[in-house]
Image (cartoon, rainbow, N blue to C red; front, side, top):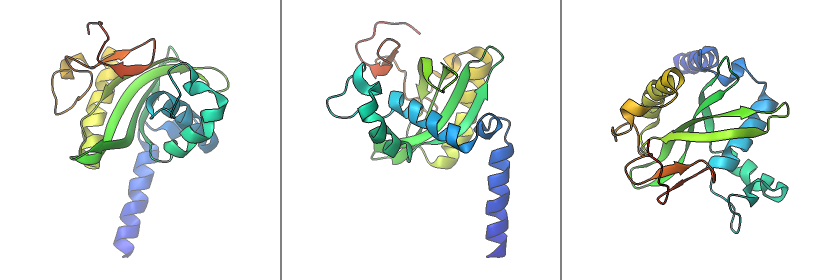
Length: 181
């Protein structure tokens, strides 16, 4: 039992000391706020909300509850103040209940997001694979600004694909976007 406690403690320290740890940038309250702000973009919208109204104050509690099921895994702020994220998030699939999502945005002084973009979603995978593959995708996104060489590798990336693309105006994945990647 003592060995398990020590290993869990060391694992927690490793996550906090990771070069891509959000703890390097924000305290817990700010991390919570930021997570809810991201979930407002990538989570399931409330019934009757659309891409314009999902940010309305009356939906904040809805997204706050959803955020309990999302976790920051990798985070980095570049020299030009672009924030890059990789989250582990819930998924609905016969293959499991977790997937990874990565992207970028900028923030205002009060942690409001702008220039938000979801770059990729992984397939549903066991958490260990999401962590390992997510790190590879995250580093690729940081170094190249995209994950181009992984786009057609469905073991790493589920979206975007040849049909589903990210609509930057609506900030959601759509089948009707005519944008080339």
